[in-house]
Length: 225
Picture 1 (cartoon, rainbow, N blue to C red):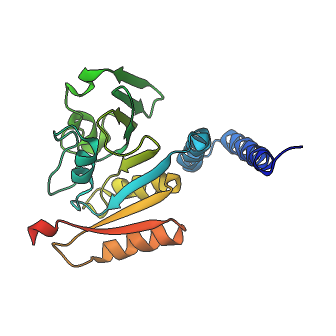
Picture 2 (picture 1 turned 180 degrees about the vertical axis):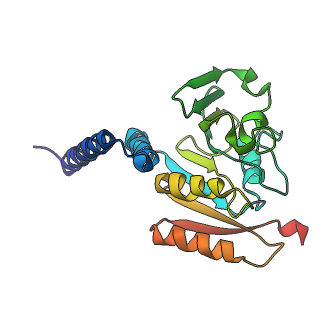
């Protein structure tokens, strides 16, 4: 006799199979406006069984997201660029692993994978920073970075996202709220204590809550006051 857990797993697999079939039919329609949504759902389905808690760091530009993630990475160096303007322009998934690994995924479908202690020998800024890779001219879809020094458990994935409300960079906000947000199990929303909550904060938080996302609100930059 099958247990309740076995029955539940079978039901979930059947449900995911139906979704996959629906996505395949949607792809057959070749509607470009649906491409990114379909890709996002396909990614969610492919990673469903890995049991990782996917937490996203979200907030307006210069709220401290990359600064916190640099600490969590545990390398003692500035792996991700920190500055008081729009910086991160792609989604970066970070987690703990036994061996350092860097995976760079391009919009074309090409993937570059590097392993070993020297993966950070050249700066990631050339891929992740608006200064070095303006408007994401390299057409990077996302980056995965796994390090033994990452200070959280291996079943937790932390994601750095492009800042919201960056002047002239609406694509940053779309990438964070439209493409990444549906993937997240938890949103950690950052707001700098250096200035009162802005209208952009309120609008973004409303979108997150409207999406029924679990959210933690964090005020940063306390030492600057």
